Image (cartoon, rainbow over all chains, first blue to last red; front, side, top):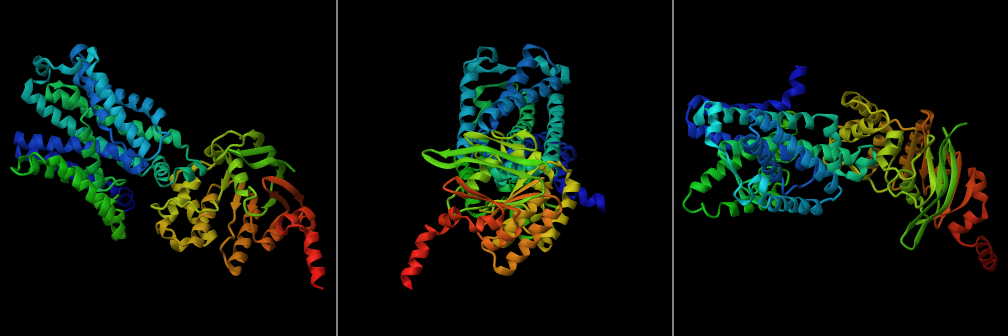
Length: 323
Length: 251
């Protein structure tokens, strides 16, 4: 009973992700597998962003920079240095973590809108830099040699393996999110979110805590980037650093409920589901991003706490389950 | 008697405004020091200087034998200094218990989450907020928020507690309660500096009083000497002789 109480908050998130993983495994259709991969990728990215946005209260409009940068580093090592996929994924995560550490030390002293603007600037600066960086192929990027897939049992098998790695990363992201949320470190982050000055007066070493949160929120996106571009076969600047993808991540986190473990997962699921419908619909396919924009506006105006936050506020009994 | 806190010539300017000028005093362990002065005298600024929110330009602040003059507030907290705010600063979206746990977790004792929860429950009982423990801090009224400020500071089990107008806005029975609470805190061996406008209370509980006026320390001493000090009466009431003259003219 005690154990159940202690870990009840992780039950629903794990079930949700497990269902996503099992769906293509049971149906056995490659198209379902690709849809599930897209959602799991969104779950991993949104859960990571939530550590910074939801727990620490710092809005990052350019979080996709870690996905793109990690992806570039990993693919470079994979193609030019013949690293294996596993080590390349780890290297992508480490590279993004280091980038976040360096950036964080500089820009995390900014607050509110200034921090958000700085994150946009960083994403655009990184895109411009990579565009002119010959080692990473400049504007044309890096293309994987098709023979790379042979090591992983051919292209079809490589896609299957990528799916399982993606599933593992999504689980890792939500476990990280959960353990941060329920740890002492997480309590410090929540205190920073609510009132940074008061938190410092109570002894929270805000600069270190914020930097660590930023690094934690950057590692898994870096790993996902490597995996995605490995699957994709090439990486180019405009695919690696799309600003609109950053904003879509924000919508997912806000929609599901920032600062909760389950919220970003639910948000990613619903948003990707909606997006899947919109891009295939005759009427919406060209204005799909404006629908996201309107959605974000609605959330901010009417349910700023997101779906899970709204439920937690209304029904106190659910608070234990909806961590 | 060991000196817990020592201020040596603390000076703070905000642009052209001289907020604190050469404030100097020693605070022995276990005392209650009352800090009084008219509005705008620099009392809260002195608190902000002591705990690192606004580091002073000149002078030194020594706390537990460490120079903390230019350190950030979390450094002070980790050394065992805690404070309440005159304008309450609750962590709105966290529960009352979680608010207090932050104090315990990140204070000088560096408690684990489990211990912090126990300490929080004890402290909430002490300040009378137990029935509110699971409410969000934002839903408390002002009096409760003041008690929460106190609870958070106490949960850190500090050596030095800075109380900024914890009696303001309370009615007389609430003031009596709070004064009892302050005395009980001292019994636990915690040294206290309190800023207060309620004279009766501050004169009763303080061992020693420092008076600030326009950022200058105009008097220091026991409550009895302070209440008879001409400079102090002048700062509060204007020229004391003028008051006497006016009374004579009326006769």
